Each structure stands twice: as structure tokens, then as C-alpha cells.
Image (cartoon, rainbow, N blue to C red; front, side, top):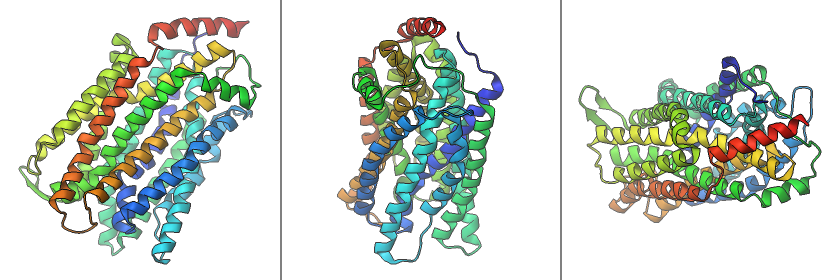
Length: 458
């Protein structure tokens, strides 16, 4: 039987990504810049740290999926983690953006420890949160609606962060706080908000869908996953999509600080590069939200697969166009950003709905369900995308001769321009191209859902 979700529960589910996205956008927009320009670690050491931590995360995500699949409480499989991990999530986030006075080597070790813990706690709350969608309803269309509410929450959380962060940082700096302390205080504010909204998601959602068989062995789950070609295709496309997003977002601060710089604009007067970068990211997220709202009507008309492909190719074209704009063309820079944000926003809710479809497809083929393990792949793709999207700009900066807090050479400025335009455009095109191999169209999944519903009644 198709499970329908009321408006309150949809909003409650969206609260989870409101909380998560505030930290995700802090990581994407500020963390690389924080490490190089505030902590003053070298780009090479930060890049190596990102790689090392992500190697561990490659194991950590599937492990969390396996654990969540085998969690059975009166509160459900996945909901309890939203309650249990909310406060640790916030506390470790604050520690990640703290700078102890322990010398250069000590700061690097501290960064390794806190960043590793942050990614582990991110996994511990986001794998169950992502998996929750698949057990709230068995309707593919309802899941797309839930995913849209999720990303409305995500972009709302992101907009709250990007619109307020430059002003919060300025406020603390104007009271005499150092750059490092200002970041710490800023993240503390977002940490409290995030913990609150994770708890609200726990309170406002329900788990309804029961698997055909609950007692799967870990080995059988892993074997099913290894044979699931659609999971591999979606994982690859998801990683490339997130590389595209993180590539752009981790480049924004460098692009505005060193290339665009402070500007005197018609109607706005003198505007600092920091406020320009905050406005740029805020408009990007606002445009993403418009894209999310378009995801349902567009995917209902042409299907999720071709919506994904078309949107990623459009983002690729718009990204490449940015390369040819000069610093004085601020309004054109922002215009391309809005159009690109809309096309990118269309894709994100569809991705999560497709992961839920893949979980149903796996159960239909094997008679076994491993929702947490399958959804942990989405968390893994997030982290792989975050790693590549964060590491590649650092290596580009190093290759082109970047020096933090200094006047940049022509070569360095060229690298900064490339890493926000051409390189992200390439990854967007590759992501869309990979989806041509994906076979779980909406029509295909309608048949799968009907047959699974009949099996569950037996």
C-alpha cells in the first residue's frame, strides 16, 4: 500500500537537512579558506589531510549503514540517531573551527583529529537521516516530494548561514576578537540551531515501510550491493555532481578575495569582497531552492533520469561561461550564478529519490533490503565529492603559485578563475553523461513498486 505523508511530516523531514546544510555549507565555503588563511596551513598539507580523512570515511560510511540496518528500537531503525547524535554533531563542529595555540605542527595534528571526528559524527547522523526517507513511504512520487522538502530545508539552512555568516564574523571582529575566535563563535551559533532542528526531525517523522526480510547477514548485503550496477552508476554520477558543487563552493572565497576584490557598484556603493562572496553564495542557494521547486513538475513530465541529465549539462555550460567574465562584470557574474543555481538545484532532490528507488530495486531483485547500506553510499558520495571538490582546488592553487594573503601573480589568478568555472563544468558534464547508463526510469520503477507492494502483503 502506498504510504502518503502529511505536510507537517514533510516539513519535519526537511528540518533535518536545514540543520545539516548549515554545516555542509560552512565546510564547503569556509573550511578550506579557514585552514589556509586563518590557521595558515599550507595548501599541500590541507589537501593531504582531506585525502587521508576521506580514505577512512570510505570505510566509515558503509559501516554506519550496516549498523543502522541492524538497529531495532521502539523509536525505529533510523530516527533514534537523530536524537542521539544531535549534540555531539554540534560540539565537534565547534571544535573543528577552533585554533589552539600549540604551534604549526600541533595545529596540523589538531586539524586532523577534529576534522576526522567531524566527518565521523556527520556520518553517524546523516546516513540514518538519508535512509529515513525510504522507510517513511513506499511511493516513488512521494519520495520525490519528500526529497524536495528536504532540499528546501537544505537551501533554507544554507541561505541562513551564507547570508548571516559575513555579518556575524564582522560583528565579532569589531568587538576585538581575532579571526580564529570569530569563526569559533560563529560556528557555535549554528551548532545550537542545528542540534535543535535534528531533534525536531526526530519528533515529527515516522517509520512505516517494513522490509520483506529483516535478518540479513552483512555478507549477503555486501554481495547484493556488489551486483547492483544501478548503484554503481548512481554513486559515480553522485560523486561527480558533488565534486562540481564543492569545487565551485570551495573556490568562491578565493575568487572574490583575489580576483573580483572590493567593488564600487551602482546602487550599492562600496562593497567588500567578503560581502560579495556571501551574497554570491546566498543567491546561489536561493536559486537552488527555485530549482528544487521545479524538480517535481519537470521530473513528472520527462522523468528523473532525463531531468538529471539535462540539468547537469546546463550547469556545465553556464560554469564554463563564467571563465570569460572580468572582475568589473559583477552583475553578469551574479546572473550566471543564479541560472546555474537553478539548474543545479533541480538535480539534488532527484538524486535522493533515485537512491530510494535503488533500495526498492535491490529488494525486488534479491528479496532482501539493506536501506542503510544503500543510503550510506549517498553519504559516501557526499564525502568523496567534498574531498575531491576541496582537494582539487588546493592542488590547483599550489600548481599555479598561490600564496595566502598576498598579491597574486597572473598565473595564480588564472588558476583561481579555472577552478570556479572550467574544471567544475567538466565534472558536471561527466556526471550528466554517466546517467545515460542508468535504467531505472519512472515507468520501470512503477512496475517494481507495484510488485513489491504485493509481496509485502503476503
